Every structure is written in structure tokens, then in C-alpha cells.
Length: 115
Image (cartoon, rainbow, N blue to C red; front, side):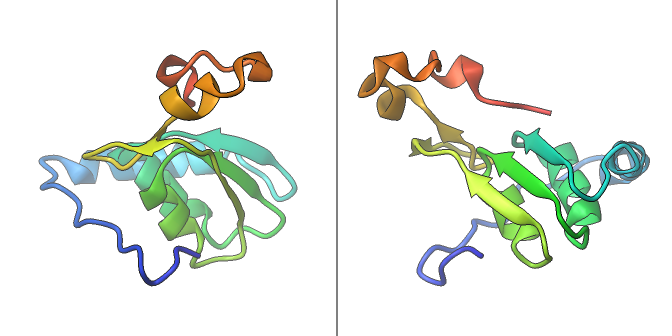
């Protein structure tokens, strides 16, 4: 769950949110209880997270504060990557955090997971 002192900023206006629903629903059908998945940031991923939030025994690794907040309402285990918070979709960027540990296998923001 996102601590109360950190509030997720309102989402920017969406032009065609209706078109994202069927895609998110199809993607959610590919995930099963017991899975561990990686989700990035963005409106489609947020829609997918809404559909997955009630799934038991699911682990999601994400760089998106918004996705983490959505999933925190359900029974999903959420793992947030570290780094610098970027806007507008609130993903974490690993630029500075991975620079301190060059052997971690990450090359910065380009290695951040997206869906």
C-alpha cells in the first residue's frame, strides 16, 4: 500500500480509455495465480493492474507508483523498483540508483520494464 504521506497525482486526461479495456482484459487472462510478472507504467498497464488487483498469489514487480497503488488495494504482492520518480505516469527511473551498483545488471532507464 502507498503510504498516506505520498499521494498519487491525478491522472492526465485520457482520450480513448474505452479502447484500452478490452486489451487489458485479454492481457489479464494470460496471468494466473502464482505467477510473478513485471509491469511498467502507462494507461494500459494501469487498466491491466485494475483487472489483476484481486488475484491471489500474484507477485508484480513494477516501476510505476500508480500501478503499485492500484495493486495495493487487492491481495497482490507488489515489489517497487527504486530510483527517481518521473512524470506523467510516475515510473521509477534507475539512473542514479544503479550507478551506485554497477554490477547489478541494470543499464539505467532503458532497462526499466514496460508493458
